[in-house]
Length: 110
Ligand code: AMP
Ligand code: ZN
Image 1 (cartoon, rainbow, N blue to C red):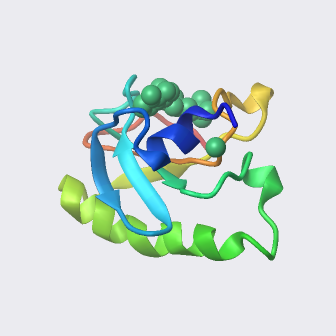
Image 2: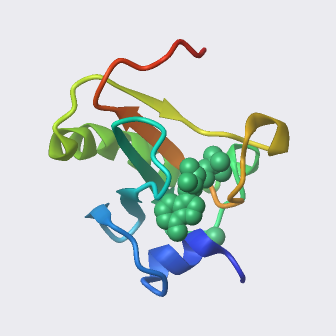
């Protein structure tokens, strides 16, 4: 499958990783929208939040169970977690990912 985040998860495309285990990878966003901007992805291909089901939700729970540790590694206590689903919401990569944004005062949004 021609999916950039599957390739990052497989190590076929380089990324600046901050966390990895058997289920998920976290790496710095190449176009940061905050002083600290990291993406957390499941290694398995899920197209986006609208494709989360009872069968694959465990990896989403694992992402959220790991976010505190990732934030600690990044040295941030205050952060926002965002996922964009669909073009109107700004989704450009169709592999589920959670943005961790922090490292400074964030603009109001949601
Ligand atoms: P979204 O717009 O929510 O789909 O988020 C996709 C994000 O992936 C954007 O913030 C991009 O800057 C980021 N991105 C795209 N390609 C790469 C890459 N090769 N390495 C790191 N981040 C990437
Ligand atoms: Zn993928």
